Length: 318
Image (tube, rainbow, N blue to C red; front, top):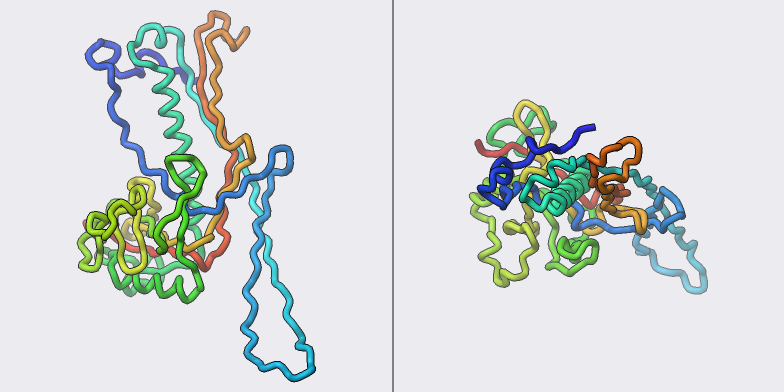
């Protein structure tokens, strides 16, 4: 079992030079913001069922007087998802707690909270980045054909919008509010594009890109939103954006329509912080030398409408 000892805490803290830990560089946890959120009641099941109904064909034939038409049948597709548990913890020695000036437990809770958020974000990202609706930049027809210079630009974005509209993907009008957990708030209708910081660099050089500070109502920008191009509002996932290893590093910019994917937790078990105090280990810790703090979640992300999301694979400028 790995323990956090005095040698693993900032030397500045241990030597009384600085009580403030360095600001951590953490990615923006954004991939869950436009999901359907469906919880499973506690003590019910580990499986949730998402049900979708296919559209009916337009009834373009005129009715015959006095004759009842054949009618139509609803077509139902069920998509199931099974939640899993994820978690981690750290071990703190009694000596490190009695010899450091830093509020160690509160800092540990913050670090663990960041790890938990990062875990949820990456789990969701990997699910929605695995969709089957793919557009390869420029003349490429496969990931292996993407070469330097095949960057994301206005033409690629407009082509993706055309595909989403052709698939009847509706624009997103609500998002999960990152400041209040899983409650939702309205946003201005658009498709959402999730990109890397390197892709952001290329987008900002495109003549058709409109940065958020040029919006007519700048206060309407979403957290992490960088601007818009055509009918897509872009947010930057920074270091958590999806990339693939190929001939060049291939960046995946994910475009989302309404109700494209969902996330599920078990009610009351969505996220827990678990702390074991010094002395709680019984005979496994006879001298009360160790305490632990950790987190545990139940979670699953699921693609629901393959045609309502699209992944553009492209290179970035060097």
